[in-house]
Image (cartoon, one colour):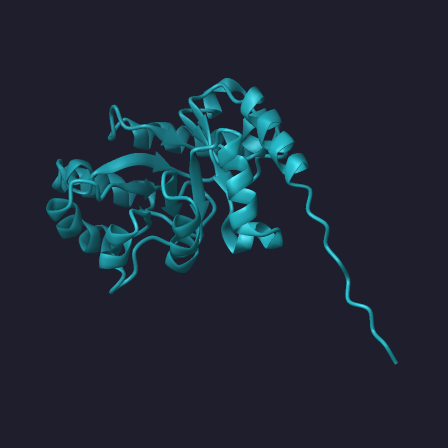
Length: 214
């Protein structure tokens, strides 16, 4: 018996149009694209190339390996890695100009000497305001800054981010709770761009928007 395998047809123009719609709705500075897990199975490199051609300059992936693959295809864009820098990955992040999202004190400690040595070794910092997946707890972050006031500069943190858990439900009370926690955290990181919005968050009120959407 012959089995036919399913075929997935990907419209890059539709993906670009979706990104342009979100960018038009977003009131902040930049609408980035998340292309982790091979752009959710759609093909990270062709999707990212199409978005870069349309003007997208910042991309998020999950792992170092995904970042290296994307960097080979797109030498001039900004690439951030959600899982951060794991033990032994430091040199690869520097060599491929990838930006780790620092999710723990261990990752911060790992990145600090790298940032001290390499002027382009910037990072992002993740505050967990409710998702309970990745990131520093707000109290943990506040304590770190209290005891290490120069921490953000020492890690060359260029973005402070968190992730909305219930953004598609505009009236969900957790949205306001997360915004309040994130706003408090940002007071400890003055002048550093911030990112809270995912796609759903772009359709929440302007105070959720900050600098970068993902």
